[in-house]
Length: 240
Ligand code: BTN
Image (cartoon, rainbow, N blue to C red; front, side, top):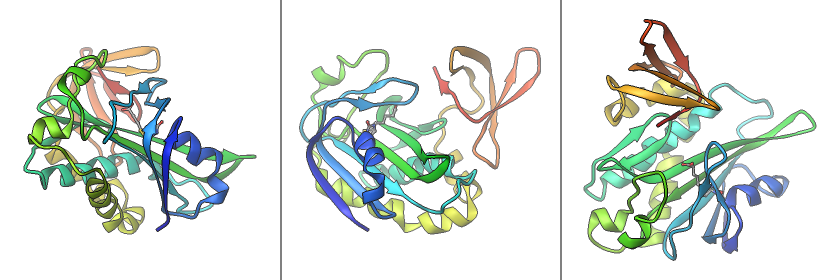
């Protein structure tokens, strides 16, 4: 596994995508500061100050895109939960891959596939984890309830130690996950969910669907039962 350490970058995902030819499979790119972090659905990811985690992992599992690759974000959300649990906390997953503690978002995951001339070059899986932030700063993040590990754990967090723990947990079962797909982690994922059996509003691009979260299927999709008793199987979207 290669490791690239950057002092400051606009976005570790952008950097990984632009330079993907230079990186081997399983390269970890870490930046101490990120000036234009990107989130899902065109949102931004704010740098909450020194000591937070901004990292992208370059993955080149094959030359052809496989339908299980989008599930890598769910696999990473479970790996992150396991690391957070080692700090004595009880994280929960909000479909598809947000990780929350006490209902507040602590991390965000953004996976992008890189194509060039119609050819699949690889995946860039980015993760931001709030590890060390001041309460006054997280309170300023618009739209969402946000927290940081130091605020939940009660002590400052060692960034390098946390990054190593997370990378080790990610790669521990990654090769097996590529063979088996979402089913391999389905129980671990569902055990940590905070959305099943709840009435949800789910944003899919410019559309909002409302319904009861019935289940997560074997491919990681969210099964929503709408008010007119239709079953929607969602593979993308954002629970509001
Ligand atoms: C989200 O919850 O919307 C996803 C946020 C992903 C943020 C991480 S930080 C490291 C990597 N670089 C980026 O620009 N984004 C991801």
